[in-house]
Image 1 (cartoon, helix red, strand yellow):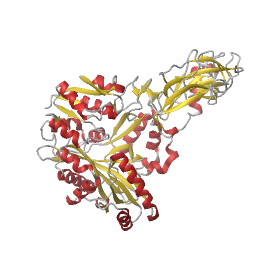
Image 2 (tube, rainbow, N blue to C red):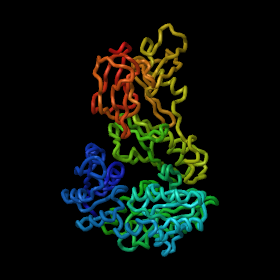
Image 3 (cartoon, rainbow, N blue to C red):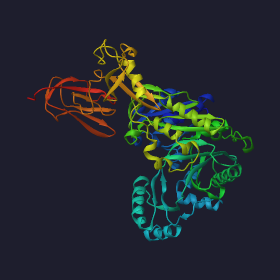
Length: 613
């Protein structure tokens, strides 16, 4: 067994690998960039090495620095995790050339499956069913158009080197083909340095089915059953589950055997995933499920497979890389129950899923069967990396039990001040189509606003929050001889609201309340505690519109300012936002300094009315 391991990754997957390595008694080494100097994966490992600045191209994508860190720390092996360099055949070969163990497939297998057109031809030769389409070398617009016409519309144009939904276009009619082709080729060339495309028949009611495969260095290959990853947003998986709903034993046997055949065709070693597209219009049928691509690495959604099989796939990876045979034979593997995984992101669905960056001042995950994360309370979500906070996994004896448990976990999750997609995930889990397993990859796009969480809490939740902070007296606008109910004024995430509150229920001294409902979280402040400001700053309070960094302070306290004068410049989401004086007056309060990080709704300045000089 390997005795020492460097993890060439960060965040959640690095922590996940470290957890299994520690159980096996393996010494671990983490690598980190400037932004990750105090990250959880760095503190969890036995040792850590700095590899460069925060941008990935200056740190996590520099294979030579990672190999140098491995040599410096004397480790035996490198595990790439997923993403970054995990499917880079050149890096895998460089690791092996350095005399280190590569915890992954042979570079030749990565190369064979790296280009979609070549992989599809290879699968056809191996007898694996593939989607009807065109894979030819002739990439002239005329030939591609002719092939598309023959296949029949709608047709899908896909970059042969693509991934993550890039370089992909659906074309509904012949008249739209030429423009879509040019757009797809430009994006493919920009993203992957390769403008070549393939064509596939568009599947009308598509489901994304994938099979976990595993091979060892002794010629053994097994599958660990299938997952359904049909719930997607812009080609990115949102909720994954295992097994696939509606998969009968006969269809499962056929699809899983096809996946094993695919892995054998490239002499596969280690963990891999064979992805299929299924036409679900008549249920899952073996003759309507086709090979799409192979991911030559561990998948983000591997926990759902672990939970239904009782196997640790990272342990399998390490044992196989050490030269051992697969821990189980095919007949020893079986499905137990149902598992679902939701990807919890720092993003705001109400604002177009914009990433939300900053400090996790509060990080409370609801009662969870399993949580895989690379952060904790106090951690920073930076703009440099994927904003995934955690993967929440639920298990139950059947699909509905797993679904309800996952929804309950998300409903009771409170994260602040960052916004998350928890409310969106809750809506998706409760949507009738998902609850009844009427799945296809277009469900989220089709439902649109119906899956967006509520922008504000219910009146009952507002009243409960107001009662905890509205003390009798001037703070909350209450009087001792007030009527039974009184209308108090508050700030909800920086926006003024009037709430009917029972004065007798008020609690003396509370400064704010964090409200949580259906996975959504808001902050409620007394009217004066937040500067009494609204969105139009009509009372002179200048509030931060979103989390970000102050890059310029253009005024000083006491300075006289004119309406429209620039007060501060906030950098957020890689854009600069100027905050201006709402009227003539003077700077009565200034709570911002250059370089400082601020949260959404923070009081940055207060302008008092007066004549500008």
